[in-house]
Length: 353
Image 1 (cartoon, rainbow, N blue to C red):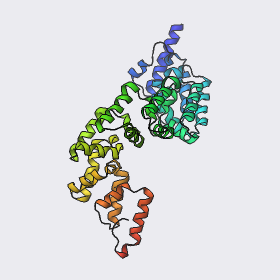
Image 2 (image 1 turned 30 degrees about the vertical axis):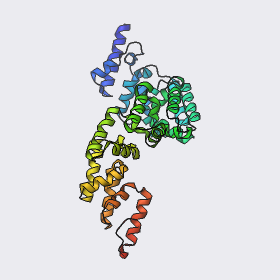
Image 3 (image 1 turned 120 degrees about the vertical axis):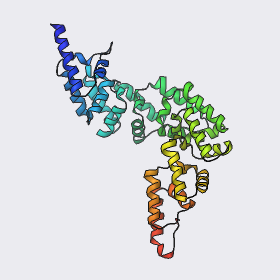
Image 4 (image 1 turned 180 degrees about the vertical axis):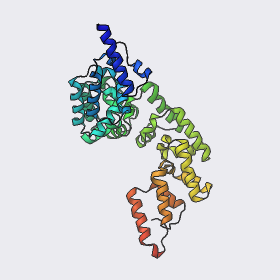
């Protein structure tokens, strides 16, 4: 009778997971993990009740969000306790998260669910103290990289940060903190297999001393998340497309290292074509971009195209100087410059200040 009842529970839970949550047969089968509590053996109705609770507490919006947590942390649902509710409450209060941010955090890092509140509190306190973060900065860092809460301070975070400070010894503690805030993932990169080879490659490739390396990382640390192979492909494209020498290429990248984050097909190539089309002269466009590398890193859809259209609508002369301003002006300065031209058109002003 026991085994018959157990089989009935398994059948009922499989049916719920497949019909109500949309898991495939293989996905359901993988939930039967040896050595962990099994959600398939829960009594009839219990699994659905627990999923409903989690759905309501995290305000999950659709089946795909529910499936993600069920698939990644099934054992949590198998032994759901009041500790989970306390943990969620703690994070929402400690980080002052709204419901959307809370939901996003657990969807991006479902492995946080089984982590203890004590360990997360230790990590948060260490980050805030070591990086000298206020509450807002701490929340922003965790929202960018929620998986940081699942890392050990003594075994992962502290040794990595200590190494980064030694390796980038020309940067002060405040600057190192800013680097980590821009790219929290840097604390998760393996030193021997990732960070050290990349720093060595950058110094060799661009002939950088420690000070220049530190400044490059300080300006745009996010490119460190890409592989050296990816950098090389982009550098080859830039060197060939802009007809640069090795020395010119080094100067180009050091001016705007964020370019290494850009995709060739969807960013660099299309953005260069934008300047060529706007000027009607490829050589002049290449010269403009070579002198101002950051122009390749701006968003086509959010900045360059709308501003070019506004420029044309205002009857402003489109030349290299105008395009540089279209890219580099801040939103506030752009609005002010455009307003100035519109207000003084009767005086014959057709160029952006």
